[in-house]
Length: 357
Ligand SMILES: Nc1ncnc2c1ncn2[C@@H]1O[C@H](COP(=O)(O)OP(=O)(O)OP(=O)(O)O)[C@@H](O)[C@H]1O
Ligand SMILES: [Mg+2]
Image 1 (cartoon, protein in one colour):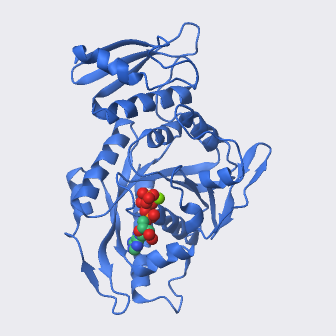
Image 2 (cartoon, helix red, strand yellow):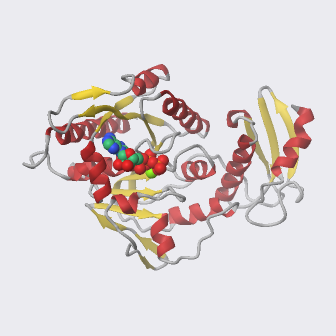
Image 3 (cartoon, protein in one colour):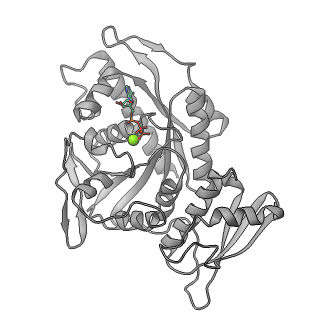
């Protein structure tokens, strides 16, 4: 791949560091490009904060992978700038204070039900007596606000330079979209992204939480990488639907987490079985148990499945997580009960997994 070095340099001209200079190649930061075993190693001289370096690494990987260099073959090595503080390991960069467990919820493919599952897992945990927060990490397509029932603007307060999350259905939550509405000047583009995310993550006043769930955007790009590398996560949960394409993308997401050494807590299969709201009977519309089989073959825990249910969809549209209702609630139809039981069982599995590790 040595002969490719010039091509790689050309591609890397699309990356700037910390929003300064022309680009990392023209600025002379790319010191060496070579191959080592099956890895393309890119040595970059850069000082600064860890968050900035992580964002830089994420950008380098993203832009190269868009140019057909598989992410798993890229290794970014930072060379220390003389006099700068040493570059530290990439994972577990910062702990969020007063939060016992932080779990990222991701998927390779969009629209598989991450946000819906995040809301419903959170509401289930609240019913079990836990203090729960949701961070909507989806910058370009935030949906937590809508799913929580906020129609337009969300009343976010900023006190002592800290963002105060809103609380709905017993869940504290914050979304990039809330802040954009709150008119904070934030630049959500290019090299500033990593920096903005960092600011966002560490400027929220969560108070004490048992669980913080991070609803990740779909895919395996720079936002996801920055998010999962900047905080000390307990691990990630992958949501998938049983179709082949979704499973393939889920594997890609699992690879991404593996690569940045984030533990996979387990896989949840969503929308595999349709539950009839009238008779309560289930039908597997796709080949059954795709998620379970994938989890098994990758030796990852299977946390459970959530059936496809009109009630789940309707409740999301209405801004009320279905799991916020009580099982004993007289109006709960049989499909709703199935959904509530699924979530309860998934959360229990998740708790077991976290306590075991
Ligand atoms: N179990 C389910 N039963 C019925 N509908 C569901 C279920 N899970 C999710 N949905 C519906 O599927 C759609 C996509 O769900 P959602 O927005 O949660 O996916 P997502 O993975 O977060 O999407 P994105 O990738 O765009 O962030 C929504 O309309 C939601 O109501
Ligand atoms: Mg979503």
